[in-house]
Every structure is written in structure tokens, then in C-alpha cells.
Image 1: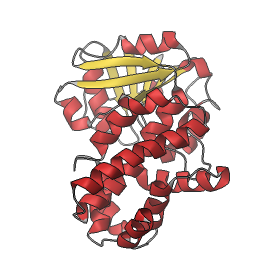
Image 2: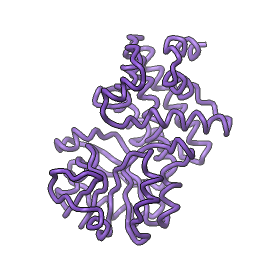
Image 3: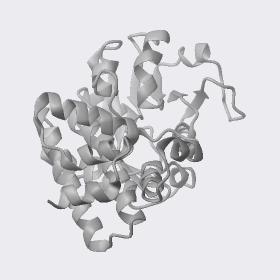
Image 4: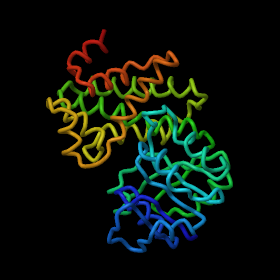
Length: 294
């Protein structure tokens, strides 16, 4: 296949590397980078199959300003909820493209390990199973790929786990112990599923790679940006300082606010996400812990 990758951050680069094992893959970004097959945006949009790896919070405006053609076949490799509108990424993309031309990539995957060719398992989620199968065939042997039609479940799981990862970083940074951490992840998974079920997601999505798999990975390693945000909060750093040190987008910071707002509108019980949002806004994490335990 001939594939174009839009977004040359670490994840975009990793996907270009992986997909290049079996395909002719080009890449573009806002700023020119010294990467193999780097081309202009105009060149990339001549390609039928596109992988979009842009930060979730810029996606809505980016799509408004960069028409890519309704005939393109898209694999979205971003995770998050738009904080300004509360829209899921599939809702944003469906304003610009037919639903049958959009698929979403989820599952536990650090860019660094993908670029090293280490074993990874991912899920391609799409209403159009033929499209999912087409992208399925593009992945290399070291990536085990599955197919699902639970788009909304995968979206919510991929976004929500970043919020729980921040909580896990706080938990470990405060040295609360293994018992507390295990309880946090277990209850975090329950909370993710409760939120997802409100929107019609399937429970098995949260028990699989897109949910539990991605959660356990993201909430357990300093390779995770969101986990590092939690560690910074536990050390008493303010958010501006944490994000400056990070030098990358931590989607969980914005997703926590989006989930908090949605939960108020829809009356969904999300205690962990609520406390993460409040801590990001300045609440003492020890007070959040006390409130969670009560």
C-alpha cells in the first residue's frame, strides 16, 4: 500500500517506521523534519490511505483548516476528548468525512518500543469492517492487530486511561504503596466502563487491549507522559512547570476537564476523574485522596 502519515511527533514517526516494513509510507507535519519520505501537506493529501497522528486538542480546528477530501480512507491514531466542545474524535471526524471512511487505532503502545520493533498488539476500530481489514493488512509482523466495531468504546477507553494514568503517577509519587495503586487501577477501569456504557460502549472493549491493556501500560511507566504529570503533581510542582518540563502534549490534562464537564451534564459518577481534574486545578492531592477514601 501507499500510505501517508500526518503528524511527525513521536507516535507519527513510530507508525511511519512500523508501516514502512510492508508499505510505501510518506510523512508530513507543520514543520519540516529530517525524516525518510518527508513531503508537503499538498503531496500527502494525494494519497488515498492516511494515518492521522495529531494531538486530540488541535484536531477540530486542524480539520476545519485542512480539507483532506471525503474520498480519503483514514486511520486516526490520536486519543482524547475535545475539551472545548466535549466531542469525541469520531464525532469531529464525521463532520468532515463519511463514517465508513474512518477507523481508529487503540491499544497499549509506547512509540519508543514500536520504533525498536518490539512486540505490540493494537486494535483497529471501525464501523466499516472492510476498511479495518485493509489497514489490518498494512501492519508488520511484530504488531499483532485485532479488529473491532466498538468505535465509541475504543475512543473512550483510549482517552480515559490517560486520566487514570495521571492519578497513578500521583499515587506512586506520594508513595502510597502497591495496595493503593492496585485499587486505583481496578476502580479506574470500573469508572472508565461506567462512563463508556452511558454512551453505548461494549464492556469487552474495556476488558481488552483498548481498555485494560492500555490502562495498565500508561499507568505504570515513566515512558507515559500522563504518568509523569502525576509524578510532578505529587512533587508539588505547578502545571505550567510540569508541562514545560514535559515538552510534549499530555492529553490526560485536557481529557480530565472534558470528562468532568460531561459527567456534570450527564450525571455520570466519575470520582477519580473528578479528583484528577480538581488536583490539576490546584487541589492538594492528599485532600483528594482523603475524599476518595471517604
